[in-house]
Length: 249
Ligand code: PEP
Image (cartoon, rainbow, N blue to C red; front, side, top):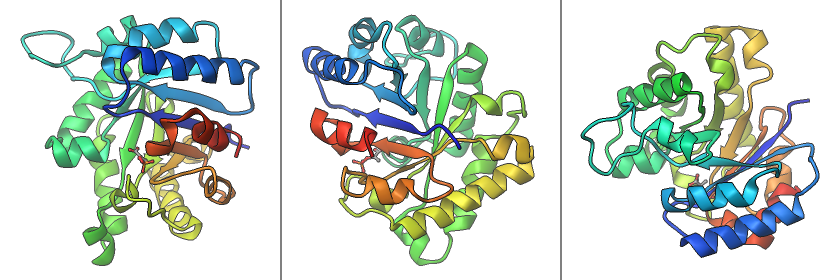
């Protein structure tokens, strides 16, 4: 049995007081160690304050992005060491909004992955196809390419630090969720690719979350699938009740 992970991506939402208030409610509601991992990814400005609130709590902290360089003249960027300094354990990398809206290529995602691992962060590595790619029958080819590029030069020792997220772009923020069958098929494909790259020992226990309009009503049927080991949640993670409902799937 793989320990599932339920992760909240708060994107560019929440001021510091708003993020702290939600983190506080999550901390109080999930104070006992659960049989699942709970992660929140607030915006950069709230990381330090949320980290302080979550001290000693099983709810864990993630950033939403980082730069691959350790430091330098990169105005507006944040390094892995800065995220660790702010209390982060995880960092979301390769999110489709970064790829499509901010021009992140597979090569850039790979540099970030390697820098994150080297610094001691645990990447949450996101992959997924667009609607056009799905409709043209290219889903598996796209996933294969994103895996190949994103995991380039990441060895079997380091890959254990990575959590995976299958997020079909057409399901993110649209209210349209992949059916459990569609999601399972993609998750199985990802696990098979990991098996051929790293072997069964690494692929079998790998956590592969599903993301794309997960809500308390559909979380259970997605999580019942054998290769779905959690959820990366955007919209429904912004309110306590809906995110708590997903955590308790
Ligand atoms: C996401 O952005 O990772 C996501 C899955 O968003 P939503 O749940 O809103 O579709």
